[in-house]
Length: 205
Ligand SMILES: NC(=O)c1ccc[n+]([C@@H]2O[C@H](COP(=O)([O-])OP(=O)(O)OC[C@H]3O[C@@H](n4cnc5c(N)ncnc54)[C@H](OP(=O)(O)O)[C@@H]3O)[C@@H](O)[C@H]2O)c1
Image 1 (cartoon, rainbow, N blue to C red):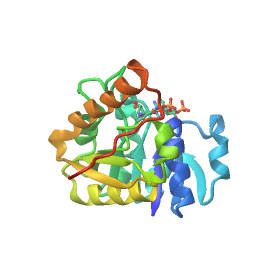
Image 2: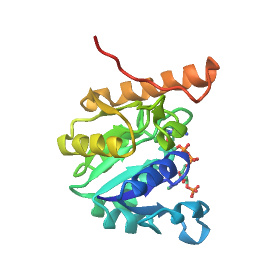
Image 3: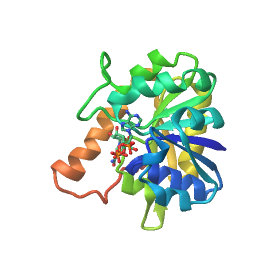
């Protein structure tokens, strides 16, 4: 699959690497190609560097792992080229929100009405995206959104990144809940001091 990664820091870099290793074609999107700092990602297979608009245009799926307050600026650059495509929102409004919205998912829904928006890859630390294997078994990922195709693709990409299962959290109305779920991980890992090497896995009887 051709995947655009906008925001190539901790989260974008981890997923770009996992997906490149899985055989996907990765189009990194950056604000200023001449100032790109995450050069190590270009050592991954099938990976190239572009402007944000070019990367989104080249791809079938767009993952955004930038900062929530940049959502409008990013949407302005990808609006035309993201129509009908899947856009995965991996951001959490922990410290900042997009102006006028509670979270980035709401902003994407408003700014990109013709795209398939889902929230995924936001609920665990980036170290767990780089290595989702604990004791020989993959941890779980979670996806929310009402876009059917978006959800199917996000689920497949979670498996391709090494997660065991990608649980369906529900429709658009559950995107905020998935941000609270991310805050629960942050609370346990950081505030309660359990460390970032912990993860959620659903077990059933
Ligand atoms: N860190 C985690 O463990 C984790 C886990 C799950 C979800 N998240 C969420 O994922 C998002 C990214 O977190 P991160 O830790 O990966 O952050 P990060 O390492 O600081 O990377 C942020 C990226 O956003 C880009 N960016 C900043 N402003 C931008 C703009 N105006 N337009 C386009 N790109 C812009 C930066 O590009 P430049 O290099 O050009 O500045 C950088 O590549 C956050 O919303 C965070 O809450 C983080």
